[in-house]
Length: 519
Image 1 (spheres, helix red, strand yellow):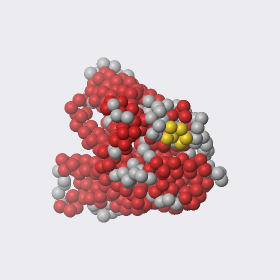
Image 2 (image 1 turned 45 degrees about the vertical axis):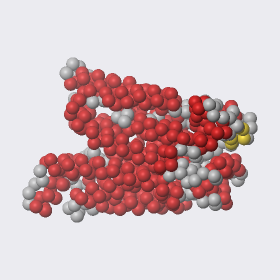
Image 3 (image 1 turned 135 degrees about the vertical axis):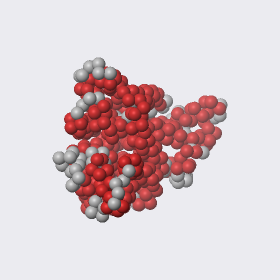
Image 4 (image 1 turned 120 degrees about the vertical axis):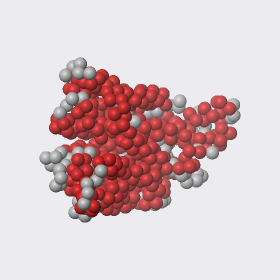
């Protein structure tokens, strides 16, 4: 594999095939007030994704009672319990359905309206969805909860595409990892806030549950008020809109320096390489030989996040703790504890992302999750067969370790790396595909776990443990390190490897292979 780090001596150097030029820039960006302000405005979408992921679980019983009471008002008869359970499953699952649709639209919205413009547009869906859920009890309509959750899911699907894209494109190369983690950090903060507010002593009760669901509008209003004062993505302005002056103005504001020529040179170099390329949509994304490897990595890493079993912990940790012999009251507080641990470790991972590297942290996270999953399975077995009373404590501890390991790498890196693996042209389409996979896996885990728990009982985490082992091996063998590399340098790694593979196996010369490779 080509070692891009060996090319530091020249501004532009070619690979051994003499077909893949790489631009080197040595500027180091630093944190500025406009960069922090823009990041804080952008991650409102991340916060809402986390909040709406965690908010619906605590008030389950009171919402089911509301559904039954509504049926009594309409028909004079109580609703059958199986129908109530079906409607509840729809309320939970419809969020992921909306997310799938939103993630598919994220690329088109990003190209049509810009990264900032797309997020401001998506806030309207958050406010509409939040209002529907807030007023559902007043209107005696559980249908409004379903529609509201669908719309909020659509908003969150857009946000999971737009926020990481914006953060990766406004950040200087040496801070891109740290800013990229901010997306996942605020997802975890949103989950924790939802878990705390969802306690029955606060808002998760029969009186205040509509307010609990409707509070998702607050971050959207904040973003609408602040984001217009933030710059649009400089890459979008230069490469998509050819607005050189606006791009330079945005960079000067974000970097806090007058000379932003290095950043502009890198973007122009990328633009020159893409001038002859047609716009790359989702179908073309799968057809291009040069994009198959990074697309595969992006998809596998999204699956490693969702199929790791983390959503089992986030959605059903209270149920897992109860199954392990912990009281229901203590289980709810233990769940809040896991949310707090996730926030803390994600915060710690921010400075590590650009020091230890994406690949290293992802491998560490997956490995520790694997071990924690094994220990959790053993402790559940000890509890099931009443072998040792202390196994309940081990179950809680192993879940906290599991969540902590997730925050080290698998929680952040799949969101971050998909934006790093692609140049400006295919990036929006790649993000749409990768995040559609993420939402689909999210839905499948959420919808199948109750049945899986019923069938496998104490062995329920074994499928996730097996998948964690597979994902670790894949990451070790195929995922490159991307820390402190420009977008063009990362793309060059894949071009060089694919060229070697192509003409190495066919015996063609490099020029012929390069033509076939680009097509």
